[in-house]
Amino acid sequence: MKRALALTFAALIFGVAGLAQISGSWSGKLNILPSVGLVYTELVLNYTVAGFDLSATVYADPDPSSVEFEISGALGPAELSGVMGFDFTAPAYAYTDLSASLDFAGVGLTGKVFHGVYDYGVSYFEGTYYLDWETLCPEQTIGNTLMLYTLEVSVEPISLTTRFLDCCDGIEFFDFTLTLDDISLCCGVTYDMELYFTKAGFEYVRFTADPLFELCCGFSVGVEVEFGVNYKAVTPTFSWGGIEGCVTVWGDVQEKTQEVGIDGWTWWGYKVYCELAECNYIEFVHAFDPANVNPYVGYIFETLTVNDITVQENEYVKLGFCGPACCGGTWSVDVTIIFAADADVDLFFGVTRLLVSTTVPLMDSLSLSVDYGYSVQDGTSLALGWSFSF
Figure 1 (cartoon, rainbow, N blue to C red):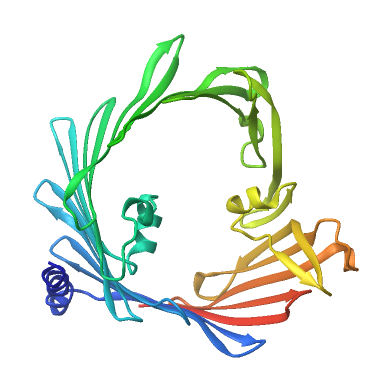
Figure 2 (figure 1 turned 90 degrees about the vertical axis):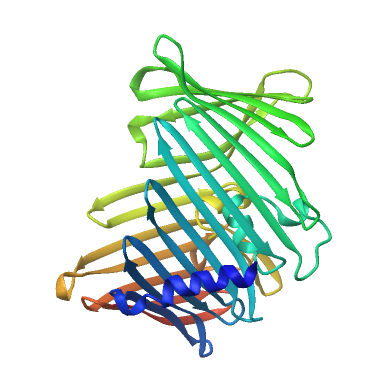
């Protein structure tokens, strides 16, 4: 099966290359300081043939490297797409992900098939389906496979999703999800419902109304109610349209342990973003809990060691500038200053790192980037990057 799929993709992409117009890009980054070395390089080739978009992507860095083929287009009334990946380091086949969708008389039908090999396809599978491979198929070894079959049926306002799993020991039912969207409650209020089953039985039913009602000044309140096998949870949500996009607050509601209700609010951190002009901005982030804020800011906060003392970063200021460059392009500069929380080590104004990223177009199809960094732990770093399209 793996060989047949590989031959099919290769025939589609390379067998018609002579009839297609080739386009693509080549990008990469090279470390200059503290030592010379490749960060990554990526080559993308695109073809368009008979309404189908075909692409091949080769990615390489010092550790994981991969080759990926993609296809998308229409075959009659059906929309088709597929991805096949290979581990370039082994080398080994990693995964195939195929999808076909069709809309007929207001009914949407989608079928998906994923096939992956442990452990080459784990990263793609978990990043795409948000499932843990080893939980689904425990104790697998190199070369074992996982297959996931998905069938989706939707007709407004109802959507049904059924999935089946195969861990080399036969196909079995995995889970079932029923969702209803924008169901009218009363007074212009709508709610969403989600009912979820697995092969173990009922898991939960969730009702979400957001907004539930609006207060003055653009302030609105929503609520999410979830009933599980042995629990119930009520989660309020708050939004303020008047400052949306300028001030962001991260946190979580603390529920009472002995009774239904809310015990308080845990404030993780906040962000202030102000656009000064087109692509010129200032951004300020303060984290009371860096671990919980990190997923929202690209995991920028790190734990450093300076003179055998642990330093936790919790704050940064970012400035962005841009302007017209040659060939109708735009140059850009981003400056990020990162600070530590109550460090016991002597730091200049609490600064732990300075990051400067610059991009300058040299022509329509070529741009260069320079990334400079300084860290109180690791010293100075410098990297040169490029992006070339054709």
